[in-house]
Image (cartoon, rainbow, N blue to C red; front, side):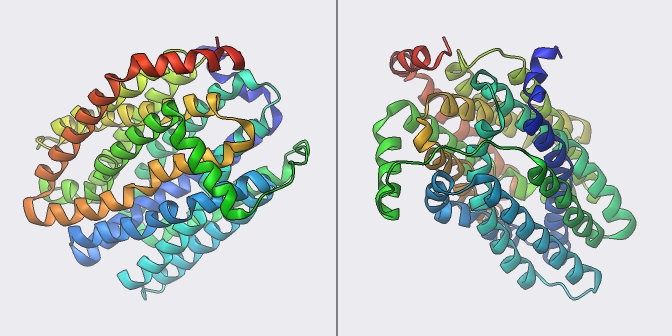
Length: 414
């Protein structure tokens, strides 16, 4: 990997963020694996796995438009310190319940809803905050790709640690260490030196600004098309994660370590995808990359659903991880390069709705469908939907390119 892939790290604020967020994300992935395994062990229910996934993600769909307006109005660093602190307290609460052996699935669901509410504001604000950490706008695409590599590096390490810790000392330690890991990103945010943003023009009413965001997104065809494809893939494809405990236990006849291996393989593939994107010098041709990556993701899911061998399943998980991360990150990079600065928070809120907000509906559907036709058949159908959606997007690429080229020229991308 060449040095150009790390060029965003020359910015001090971004270096602080990269280090702090890296530690925190390892803890986040440990908690996610521990949560799904804990629910599966307590209930052995695909439906309840879907319900827990739904409860943790549905707030992103409901609250993201409000979070977008706040991200455009408020001090973004201050918002992130608050959201990270609340996430830390949620992790400590989970740890206390598990370590005292008083936890039940009816504790997990409301705590998942609480974290989902926090994440609705955190994800939107964090995406909009990326340009604030950079002195040079031309490094924005690289910073987005490095954020994704950070996410997936943690996705590689966190599940592996979680699998070992669950086997040795149980799920409670994963929740406790996740709570501690938030201290790193909070410290990094407090150490940053961010230039004060210029005062915005007279603010309109809250609902009026939300309406402006809707109008801007749905009247601009490239943004609308990118978000619709992302929403489809998130709805039909991303819920594969809630079914992973069933594949690890029922299909591959393994335990918590098997689940950790599968998720780590997915993280390794996704890390490769973000390295591929970080090595690019600009956002050109990412419009074509987006549907190709969606197709790779869908085909990977379809093949994984038919596998009964651990080594083959891990290989296919790596392919799906590559596909979904390139699809998501390339969509993010294109959006960040074409959006107006004054509407960045609101557009990123729609990005959060498309990627995180539709996933809970997919999780609920996947969990219920898996209970009827089985996890393998459910995942095959999900992968097929991703492929068909990506092919439909590809058919519209010529007209989208015509609209994007003048904007790329104005922003210096070309």
